[in-house]
Length: 303
Image (tube, rainbow, N blue to C red; front, side):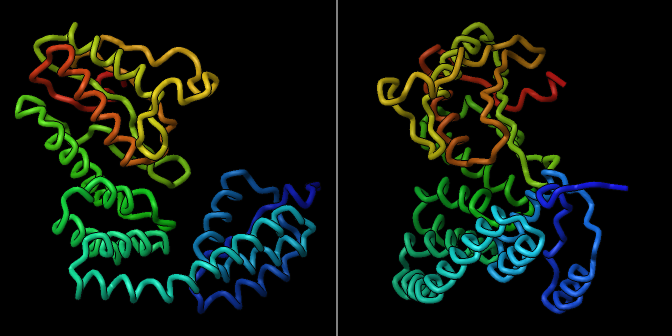
């Protein structure tokens, strides 16, 4: 016979279409035995709650019924937050849409796209993000970050990859590096993670005629990468607690496709961080005297 505490019970699957919720709730209420859950299932359950205040309320009630008071409080807070955001958006979104269309305001179009992404509607957001970029190319990185990273519901991976590469190309053009530097499609690329969410490859290889110079540039980039915050801002060393810098910077390795380094941001997806790291790398390549190179993922070379 299986023994489990309330905290170890299997969490229910409640991310269901609205028409099936009543029958699902009845089935769950009638279930006397609930098998032990995994952390992955719990994470999936929390993500479902983050997308829908109604789901959060129902899941909170389930937790309360099974004695899981900590999760009950957490989910009730999520539901309240989602309800506040929905009320705010009901007022804000029409205002932003009028400003974007009638006023041709790229900032309003960008803000509208960001809001729709946060609501879990990346495809509805895409036209507004496109409008913002068309009217003001300086919004490219922020718009791409919104599409790839802000949505509570996963955007199609291929489209996210295109937005990411578009942002990196914009950063390359803005840097003035010239035609000698080429970005491979897989640079800081996205892939499916084990938990069903996209993961980002933070390795970078530099292929070119001067591998020694490229290795020096990568080493300098690795050192500076620890100063880049989650918002894409590069801090000065004195602005950060030494404990936040961790240990030694990532090491540069030789490879058949040129020297490479894994900048190791933990796999979490961030377009603004990818753009910041590319900017740092381009600066260091220029300082090392590398005028022509191909920048791409090191994964094919490293297995």
